[in-house]
Image 1 (tube, rainbow, N blue to C red):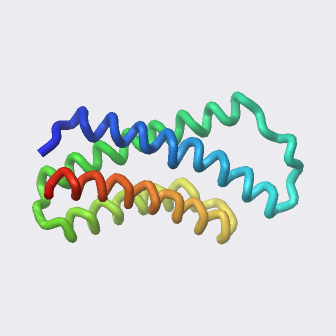
Image 2: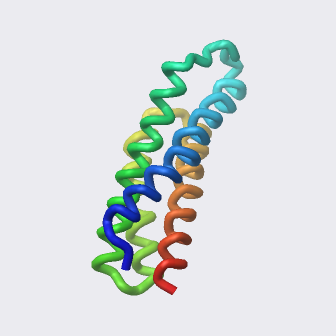
Length: 124
């Protein structure tokens, strides 16, 4: 069983790439879909989104650590982890229009799948 540092580091690194950079790119796609100006791409805004994705990944890594510590059945561990994290994500995107909500929930699910696969490889 991996220690807490393992999950915090991996959660943050995968969060940086998938949730941070991927989230920023997804925001650009949504802006394009909604016919918003394409020049509203600031370094400070990008940095904020990337840092938020990294922190969210750190938090999800911590949740995975707790779940894998107390739940031994892989299907139950995966289910509980995904439900907890998707509920947190839902809270964050609740005010968006339905299509962007779905897009961000899907991005979070991709991230959660990667973290879960890392956990399954570690336990096999």
